[in-house]
Image 1 (cartoon, rainbow, N blue to C red):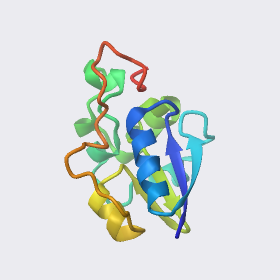
Image 2 (cartoon, rainbow, N blue to C red; image 1 turned 135 degrees about the horizontal axis):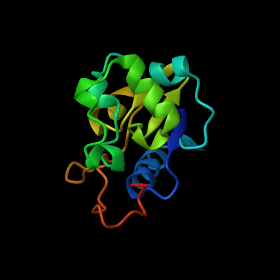
Image 3 (tube, rainbow, N blue to C red; image 1 turned 60 degrees about the vertical axis):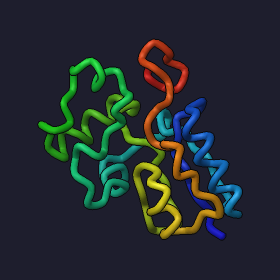
Image 4 (cartoon, one colour; image 1 turned 180 degrees about the horizontal axis):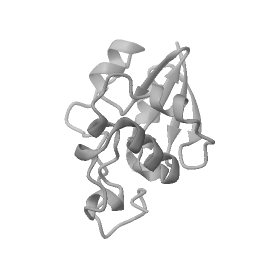
Length: 140
């Protein structure tokens, strides 16, 4: 099985579920704090591969929910600069296995990539389940 470096927001309910799925499949999960990591622009950019810039973002972040930032109108450079200033904007989790990097937790892609033993097809493991009024999952 794989060693997965898993960049999360500590306390995020979905990140906890995602780590449990990875561990249940026999993977070693090395959790890292996405918010305190010393990101270099090139390294952060590499996690997004060929995703559209809009898909790099955590849509539960307050600046996006309140309309302060519109990911549809940003260049790659602008997006990375904003994320370096405010890591809450980064789509979670960021994962690394060997040289391969991934942003987000698309269960089918993760299963194809490193394998999962259980796929919860009825549970959305990317969108924050908390409402805007409940900030414990990482809205702030």
